[in-house]
Length: 237
Image (cartoon, rainbow, N blue to C red; front, side, top):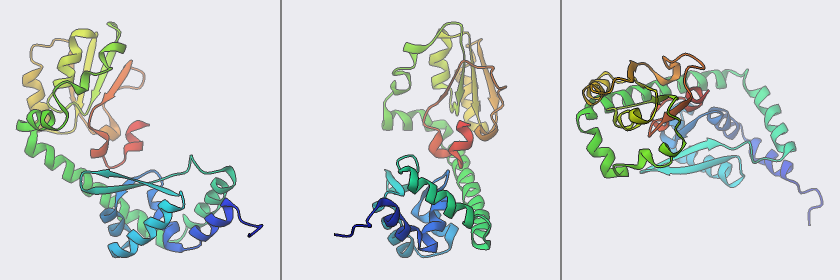
């Protein structure tokens, strides 16, 4: 038996490959599909998938299914302290390299394309979104648990409000609802639905720079939203 075996030595083997370290840096703060990662690192899917398997098997990355896609993200919180420190050292060495700078520029383009595709999707489906959502998730999933914690004096932000269904359901139970969406088409449908709700303020804006003043709401809801934005962490901050 190898008396020197340890998690850190195992992780050294994983991080010793430059491409795997680049993939981890791309995934730092992001959740990306295999295709998006291929676009960033400019390598074929077979190569990227092989290295992603090594990263997931080694506990560095995690994967979840979203329809037919497999989405990857970085795992740091579950690492032991020594391994997390190892990643900080490797990351510090990588960030200043030309290859990583090029990856960052391509990642920005990938995220911009994702935002464009998402905006186009919601523009196309605004008129039928309620039916699509009901078919996928049911008609009342957005209320489960939410109404139980509401205070009548609260101001609630419905971020990514879409056609305003959640905002309409919340309005009778709170002092004010601020409904925000980036899609003009979705907000058009929301205005029709919410016309009779005197305590709903409808605003257009991107969730990465939400048009709501800091500290002005008591609760913010994001229902079926985060997977449509390019940088979910930026929204949550």
